Image (tube, rainbow, N blue to C red; front, side, top):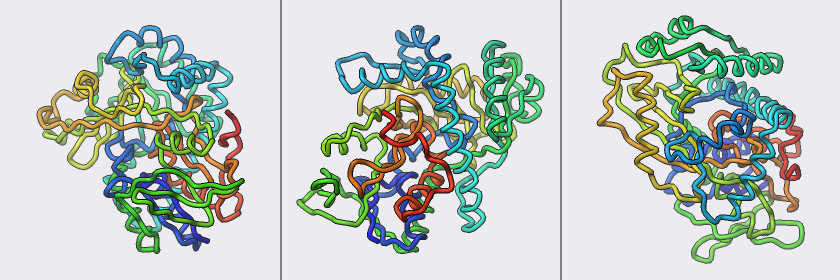
Length: 417
């Protein structure tokens, strides 16, 4: 079967790889000159099932009023007239209710754990290298209230198959000695030993090469204009220059850009871009730099070791499709990393990046069929595209092939909205 995959990030490339392994003829189309240059390029680096709790949760609801007026807040809505943003915001608030948020977290965790297992198989089979650190992820908390809430969530997740450990501050420093200088500011932590970290861009590039070796065609530097359709089928992809490509099946994995493309075809996809920032900083003192990936709950930033670099990333800014770098917000991300690890990096050598993460109101990706019989969605992974990427790709390859995926995708379809 001939399949066209729209998007060459971690989601699209993973989908293409597993489709090729299933024997399909696959073409990937993307406007960028090479794979992995959008959200996959400089993210936080965490493969983190322990991050399955969505942004839309009761704690966010309580913190949101204090965040709205702060330009460097972890979650910032730039309030302006954007009907799509306001519709998203109202749906987001509705999903902050306790029982709803808990159900959403359970779905996200299910896919994250599956993807983590698929990643292990893929690495064993291919030897793919991407500055991986298999040392777990440590979430640190600065208040007893936040730690107690996290411990309750961790206990719930343990019942669903995620190995987590609640720790006091001294135990956190034992796991990651580089936290020693911040010991007095930490109340405790939650450790997820099965999580890991690595460079998503390098991984996407390497997997794209493996996919190409398996016969996948990559059409880069190609702007997608619209989907041609008739009745209940997509009939082709219209591209810049009047070119149309056709296939038997189509997979939309365009991240934040999925929504406007699908809207033109009459599909309302509630995915809105949440801009995140990162700073990639050279390590100057290896013995004082962390090797365990860290999540700081207070500032909502993560720090991951990528070889001789540190990747500091976080925040979510709702400002449409503006991917420009706000110096204040980017600087706040770097400053948060420096507070945790002040003596191990060259702050003047920091390289800043901002990318649009495709967020759904409930924090669960949209995976599955559409009203067009030959179009499948694989998008809306928010901050967990790196975590869920290979599992999502394999599951969608199964769907295209007419097989039942190994992971239960109940509740992931667009029909839930």
